[in-house]
Amino acid sequence: GAGVSQTPSNKVTEKGKYVELRCDPISGHTALYWYRQSLGQGPEFLIYFQGTGAADDSGLPNDRFFAVRPEGSVSTLKIQRTERGDSAVYLCASSLTGPDTQYFGPGTRLTVL
Amino acid sequence: GENVEQHPSTLSVQEGDSAVIKCTYSDSASNYFPWYKQELGKRPQLIIDIRSNVGEKKDQRIAVTLNKTAKHFSLHITETQPEDSAVYFCAAGRVARGNTNAGKSTFGDGTTLTVKP
Image (cartoon, rainbow over all chains, first blue to last red; front, side, top):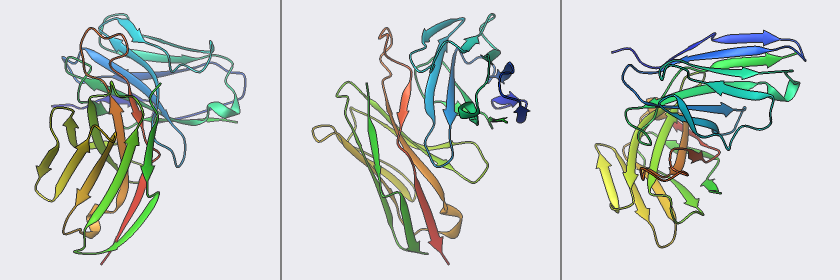
């Protein structure tokens, strides 16, 4: 079946702008995770959803970052007033009943100029 | 919180040799240890995982060992092939349901494995 998908694959924006990154998990997966990966580093946890609710948002770096999953499937990561330091690949992963084996999407490469 | 350290950062082996990558973790409550392979520009893909009630798990040329007392786990790849070349990440997390800290995985910084033909 279809894996985790993310759109857009690439996003270039200017400092100070607002961006939205979308994740479509594997159908039927109740758990969804957002990670951020900088060059040469491992994925860094941002937030974990179980169904519609954020079970753990301890990884969100500051209040410019926010994520939603209103219907328990698709999730959107929202970044306000982007900064150059936000540039990274944003990865989404899902798991069947969570917390458990996670399957990653291809990522969105965000570049803030 | 959890802290995962991974060594070495780079590893070069000759085709056919074995490769070993080691990780240590700090949180004794972690009970789930996956390994991911990430090729350049691609997504991380799970290659093997182990849970804390098991000391060793093997899948063809890949094996993982876990020492809970010492809080370390290792990935072993035997009979390496050029297509094994990639970045490998270890991670530590919790899978206990009902635990508010369960769900997230903490990743190591990766090991770049190069298998020379």
